[in-house]
Amino acid sequence: MTAGAVLVAEGLFGTIRGVTDGRKGKKGGLFGGIFGVVFGLIFLGAGNLMAPDELTDGVETRGTIVEVEEGRNSDGETMYAPRYGYTVDGEEYQFTSSVRSSGRPTIGKSVDILYSASNPANAYRTDGIDGKFHLIFVGAGGMVVLLSLFSLLVSVALIIFGVWLFIGGRRDRREAGASSGFFSDLISLAQRARAGAVDIEQTAAVLICSEI
Image (cartoon, rainbow, N blue to C red; front, side, top):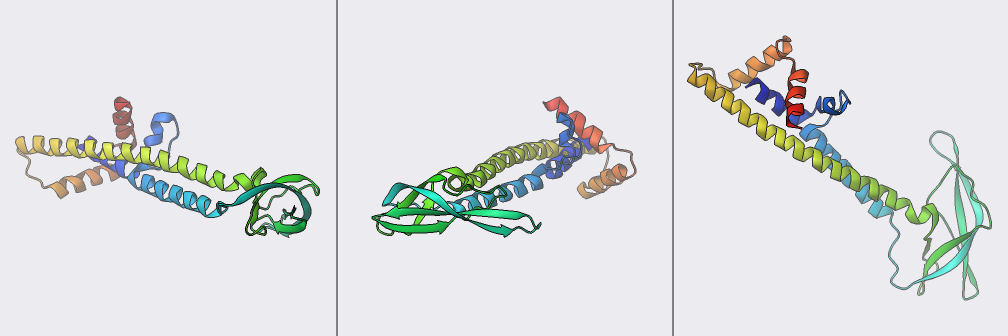
């Protein structure tokens, strides 16, 4: 019964699951998995919001970095944003990158530009960090979601197995003549763990390792 309660606690909070791979103190469990999924979805949403609008009448052309704008971040460090220039039918257009970096761009460097044929001022850079920046958030968010979903599956399996062991342990206690209730058993286990009579980390680690 103690083993079942420990597995349920591990499934919910995942406080010692890292014991099996040498990373003690790693937090996870059901709540950690849910938080990870939410966090990953936020990253996915941010990546999609940062993605440039799809141009149905997009036309590719070459542009250049015509200017570099300077600014400072919250740490007081100098950050740079390139300003791009390109020409359509003899008319010059410019726009400033939304991505800032600590490295100063080179004025005159050629870049790839995609603009709208019906509205040439609507354009964005397709190469370099500008064209790939949103993919960083999408990729990171997708990875976090996948890993968190796997953690959720493991947590649910631990909880189900732990509940099964706990119920089986209570059934054996009843057959042996014990008459304590469900919550009384839980409180008793919690008191034993608090008093040090039950080594939760060691018990859970042994149980988890035995299942791997």
